[in-house]
Length: 441
Image (cartoon, rainbow, N blue to C red; front, side, top):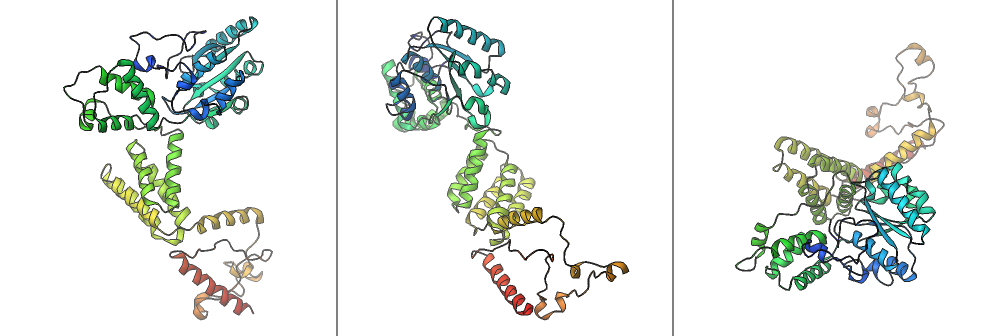
């Protein structure tokens, strides 16, 4: 991993070490001061958390959380130089307990000479809970200032005890302006223009998906080849490999996109919903997982406002099972669009929550005797079924009888909204409530 975005240096190395002239382009373009870091001015600028720490000359332990290729390693190295600290680095991918003990021992030795150590831990989320706990005493007593880097949500991947001792700083994916700045720096360093047209340049920036290291690696590949004429977007696509969408099906990206899909559906925005659906399926998500979420959505957020939503989702599941991919994905799209454009109601969802709460609170209350079956003489003798009003024999097919336990007041769990089919359901409930009141009186 080159810096901007670099491999671990030997203990004691700093950002000022000049890269070899044959080093990868990304390494040769690594920033030499925090002001040179692109796309993270909200942290490294004078008003940013890192900028303020550097100005004060004192660092606190921190976790740098952000996508790949956004400058986490660069910032850590530059921080050490900025405040005159020793820089030591390890990677959780390649290190174990023995490496940690060695790093802490070296830091303690330097501390006796008055030299503080910034310990950079790349991919810190890959250390298990016990290993993470091992940092605590050395962070607390100031042996090291910990700077951890992670692409995963620290809330899920890091111990609460470690998080309580470190500030979480979020790095942004690099926007188009930041990525363009990297390309300009590369052209200035090599003293020649990238061999692409303006449209292809824009396509190259877009293909990086916010990852500066990936962009520079792609640019270096282009610089290494001689072309008769600048590449257009089609030529660029044919020459460079296609970048796979960043998406881990068991990690935060998975939950972020399904959350975005669900919220877009709830907000009745079919265009945004279709975009997030496409993001997931293009990145390799299992269509059946998406269909399970759509089925849940049909019950939770549409309900009886449009009873066909659940039918559509289940039909889409059957269609996908029958057709497979990619033909069956159109059925997933249809279900998604149906849900997004259907009238919304969470009345059934709220009714379930309320009814479950009552059931837990009221325990084992007996239903009223008149609605209990009486298959034996004894049960008839004690009043089971006595006075039961058969609704089909009542006027209008509605008896208005009480069905609640004697010790419990009638409750209202389900309150239909004035949207879609539930408007008709509400009319029926209001009508029956009126009849119930009249017949009770």
